[in-house]
Image 1 (spheres, rainbow, N blue to C red):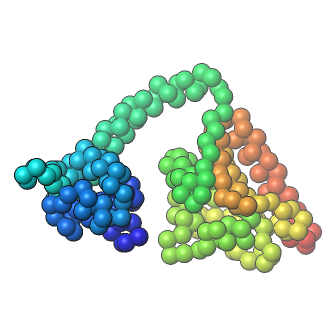
Image 2 (cartoon, rainbow, N blue to C red; image 1 turned 120 degrees about the horizontal axis):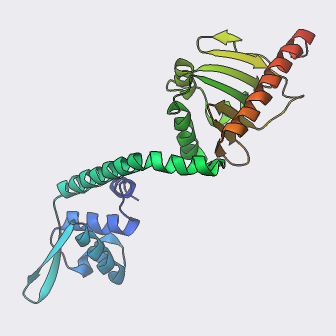
Image 3 (cartoon, helix red, strand yellow; image 1 turned 180 degrees about the vertical axis):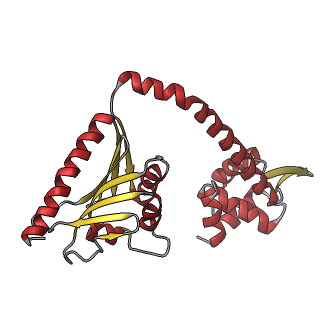
Length: 254
């Protein structure tokens, strides 16, 4: 697959659409047979791709004698399509924002936990954004640091730095390295517990009425729960663990 094929697929072209489109750009006005040959797409499927591209304003045709030729429209049309899609997305966003109040009223009437699931790195990034966009001031978190660093190593654009600047964080963490993180620094207070005594395989963050859980292995998955009662229960559990971690330290076992 060429670089251009990959990039076109990233903006919404199918594999075969990208190949037929690029074949048309390279050859100029061409018959369907020529486009099929240059793109490596069978002739019947090439006709389907031509129809799809034509419907999006990216290909047109003309007759020369008794033969039909197909020609790609200027590449600038791709940018026009993307801009139109952007406008459509912005309009949808406005409609959703207008619905939020009514939808949240329905949630409140049911008084049921709202649960969302996330998978993979992109899913976890969405879960992190829910924390950043929550408007809360405090976050309490459990984290197995070794696992967290394995999947999301510290970097120049580390989300952890963003969180520390935005929230007051209390963190209980485990690590096979022992207590290697500072107990206090700007925006965060930490307490260590030994992983051989208290092992857990995922992060739990409590903020406002929400709890998010990220589990690292065997696959990266996340769960977001929104409910006043459930979040308060987790917050009380964290407070108990926070005191327990201090007792562990006093006894010299942490």
